[in-house]
Each structure stands twice: as C-alpha cells, then as structure tokens.
Amino acid sequence: MTLIVIDPGLHMVFGHHYELDTAILEAAAAFGVEGHIFGHRTDNPHLNNHPQVTPFFDVLTHPSTKDPMLVDLDRFQIQNERLYDDLKRLSDVIDIEQSTLFYATADHNTLTGLGRWVAEWKERPRRLFVLLPGHFVFAIQGGGGTLDQLFYRYGFSRFPAGEDSRVRFLALSARQAREFSMIGGRNVEHAPYPVGELGGLNPSPRAPSSGRRRVLVCGSSRDSKGFALLPDVIRRVSARRSDVEFVVQFSPTEGATLDAIAASGATIIDGYLDRSSYHATIRSADVMLLPYLGSGYRAGTSAVFAEARWFGIPVVSAVETSMGDEIAADPRIGLAVRPEPAVVADAVEAMLNAYPARRLAAEEAADGYRQNNGTTRFAAMMLGRS
Image (cartoon, rainbow, N blue to C red):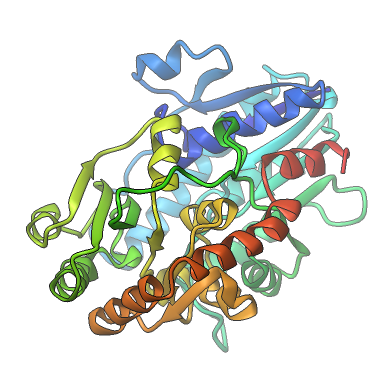
C-alpha cells in the first residue's frame, strides 16, 4: 500500500501545506507505509528536487472578468476544469488500486472537479480522504444560501454515494464538520488535527525566559486574522507594563501593513520560516495572541491555535470563532474576547497577571489534546491503524 498526497496548493517548501504534507508522510512511514506527494508544477528548485514531491498540477489560471459575481463563476469553471484534466493524467501515473489517497485541500472552486474524477474511476483506491478548508467566510442561511455554498453543494453531489464509495470527507473542527454536512447532505467527519509532532518536537516546557513575557502573533497577514488590530493592542499593553514584549511573525498575504505594526514597538520576524525555526518561535511564546475575526473563522480553524494547544501555550482569541468555542468548552486553554483593541489588550493583561497559573492550566489541557490529535493519529485514521 502507498499513501498518495494530492495537493495542487503545494508550491513552496514553507508554510502549512508543506508542513502538513511532509509530516503526514513521516507519520505513515512510522507505520511502514511509503508515501509520495503530487503538488503544483512550479519553478521552485527546492520543491522540484524534493525526493518525496512530484510537481504535477498546472497552475490554476486567474479569472478574466472584473465583475465580482462573474469572477466567482469564471474561477469556478476554470479551476474545476483544470483540476479534472490534471487528475485524469494522475490516474495514468499512480497505481490507484494499491493506494490510499489524501486530497488537501478541496475548496468550493475545486470540489466539483475532484468529484467528477471520482465518479469516472475505472479502478478505485483503498480510500480517498478529502480534507475541506480550515477557514471560510460564508454562513448558513435560509433559502438558497451564498454562491460558494451552492458551489460546495454541487461539488458534493458529484461524488458517488453509498457505503462503498470509498470517499471520506474530513474537517478539522466540530462546527465545521456540522456545517459542511448541512451544506452537502453528506457525512463530514471531525478529524484529528494533524499538528504537534511536526519536526519531532516534544511538548516539554521551554527554557526560562529573560523575565519579560513574550506575546506572539504569527501566520499569514490575512485581514481575517485581525492583524489590523495589533498596533493599537500593542501600544495599549506596552504603555501599561514593561514586562512584556510582542513578537509578530509576519508572512505577507494581504491587507495588513507591516510599518504600522513595527511602529507600535513589536519585534518583527518578516517572512516564512522553515519548520524548526517556526516551531522554535512558537515555543518561545508565553502567550499566543490570535484575535481572529468571526467572519473568517466562525466555523473555520487555525493551525496556529492547534499548535499552541499542543504545546500548552495559553491563548487569547476571539469569541464567535471556532477557537472561542473550544475555549468556552475548556477555559484552561485561554481567553476568548471581542476582537476590539481595548478588549483584547485587557485580555492580554489579564493573562499576564495570572501567570504562571495560566500556563500550568494550558499545559494540563494540552495533555488531553495530544491524546486525540497529531499527525500520527491523523495518519493512523487514514491507514486503518487506529
């Protein structure tokens, strides 16, 4: 048996796509199962020369129209057609009957192409696991729903149904699994979050700090991650206490301005980090600050939040998000507050005032979290070893 990771979004040797894909292969290898990744066709020499990666999928073209509604329709058609064509080529490259397939990640602009390919299988794999996106903006509504919901619903409908369809849909939060199940009328499972063992790091406490508490923000600078709130939050907290430092690992994506964050007094780590540097940075934190906005993370998930949970680092996050749900269910994780600068700043102060009790509580909560999550648990589920 071989584990084949199908990831058209993999185009560089940094970031969560690469970390997830390679960590899954490492976990599968521990079970004695060989694996390989098929990613984007790219000019990146590090990816092209990677022994476990074949650059395979064509870059999905950009839509040609400027009308917002037609942009979505154009993207839907172009990406699904291109993906379907690429997957047909993949059928000629892999031994599909001897493979377990893992597709990461099927969004509303690719699920239809994937389902069309599955419906036309002549040979079938042992299983196909389809990971759905970790974050999205739409909400469950009455009537027809939003356009991307309709795309998802149509995409789910293209997959064969029944006990022997060999397709299992996965989501990384309970709320997300419920909502996708409602949208598509198909069972979507809440899967283990595949983090933690990345890079072989163990969850032992980090070395004592220099005395200043480190508040860490990291990740891509999407507007939905609340980066625009940071300058005000940092200034408010720093003006009231001198025993805190803010570190922002900033992977430029959209919206947020690095200059404003730097001017607030934060230490900036600009750009992507390799695996060991990234996890060393996370484990240097006393508090993780994730003021995500409900519009993007109401049902979606955050890998950074999952990593903080794994390593027992207390979190300040936002209500009306899936992270807020988890904190409400287990307050030892941290605090969830309204994503407003003054409120977030007060929460950071409250967290620091209660140290080290807050850290001990988060570490206690991490014990149970690690039992149910991690790349080993995720791979075991796919390989039938759990």
